Length: 112
Image (cartoon, rainbow, N blue to C red; front, side, top):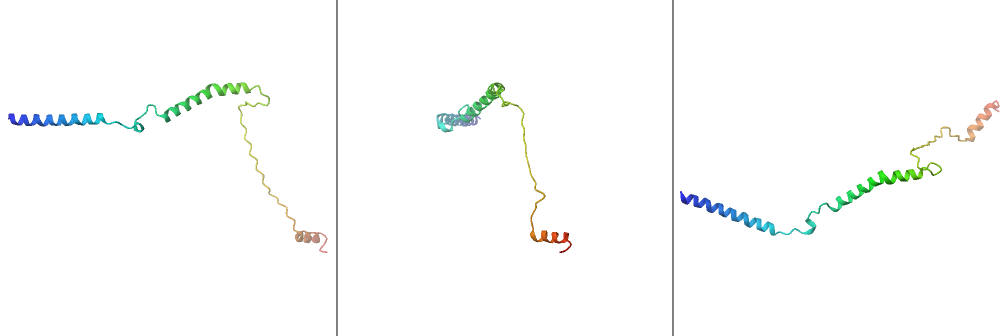
């Protein structure tokens, strides 16, 4: 029985040694810079910057600009919107047909 326990102990020691070797190898791997995650990423930083700029624009700059323009003659800073769409249909197209006009004139004159 002691041989069995010694065999199991040796197998466990072998597995522990193999796991230690794998951990050492994984710890020695250097990931290239282009694969390393930056936190936050450049695109994430850009989106945050755009969000901050739009927030500043909507909360401070645009209302201040609108207020400043409210005194300009002509209501430049008006908050109303007007859309006008004009469509023209020509439903009575007059086309001069000399032959039919001449026949109509002759008929009015009594068929002369």
